Image (cartoon, rainbow, N blue to C red; front, side, top):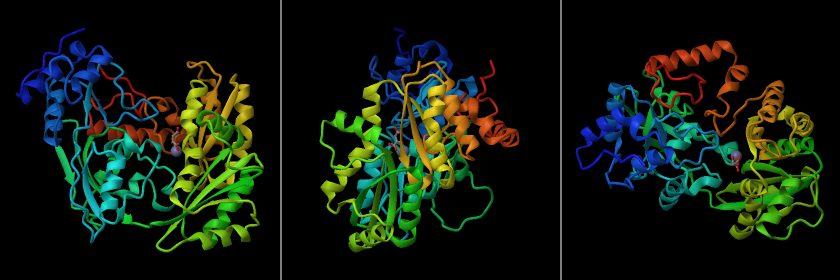
Length: 457
Ligand code: MLT
Ligand code: ZN
């Protein structure tokens, strides 16, 4: 294996060597990860420690014309955080500082390498709530969460990562640092660069710090698992809950086939005796116990067989049925993972049509689950050759036909880049390309992610 040439504490020299030797030293993907991770396994050199070091790396890479791929927890599902063509891998995991929570305004500044779970803990310790959550919480990092505008179950009430970004600091392609960390609620001086970077998946800048908007901590919680017959019934239930249960925070769904996989994988009994084709998992959160409010809303909606979980352990028990889908599916085969969003009124049309579309495209089976309130369906296709694009094509085409999007929370990455023009249209794609060219004229930042363009030689 090629030896890492970067040693000692002369960071500027190190950065220059990394950039100059990127294609030589890092032509092995494994070596790239080890060399740029906090401590290189081969020679124990340190590389990235804080934002200005990231700026040093970027300035050197810009001088050398070396491309970079930023990486946080590497939990992404669309390939945006792994080098593909010998790019320098910039790990941001050591940017793990958590600032003091400003309780008056409800904000905190955190490094890009802070895990979502650590942010949640810091917020909770100050009586506040990070108000964003999903299964990868222990390993995903705030920089990545913001870079792909992650969502999760609680986006229904609190919005996706974008809604939590009160400002950020980022290193641009030439190594310059833009910093908007004051967290001003009202600040309309010029373009909103921080929001442009949200969801840009490392293609417009390396996010190094984030000013995160918190929410009041609502400790009184209750969840309900509701068995239903169809997606249409689920959409009707959501409408009723939104109207009658203002404490509603999340409203996810899964199907019986997925539940069966999860129960097998987790080796547990079904908590529901009379199984149904479709299940909704709703959670309410408030300052005082929302159980009565939820129960009344369910009753008004004609539901009499919901499973109610009003303590932490039983709520967790229900959520592991939903969050356990990813692991259970992975254990059943290598899935083609799609993450589409459709308008709620089209959800039942999409859900009814997917199995047929996937089967016609040569795949064996499809497991559907997701975030009902956002019209966000995680489509996991099993029994298709990993290189066979037909099932992906069929699912994404169907989502577009239903007026939806090809990516709701996982991002475009490299996996969906080829479909972006079909989803957004030529005018919007041309505008995106113009922005990319203006901020990254050498195409050094995560080339090939989001915009399917190859790096100029
Ligand atoms: C989820 O909601 O569980 C995630 O987005 C993960 C996935 O789609 O596998
Ligand atoms: Zn999800």
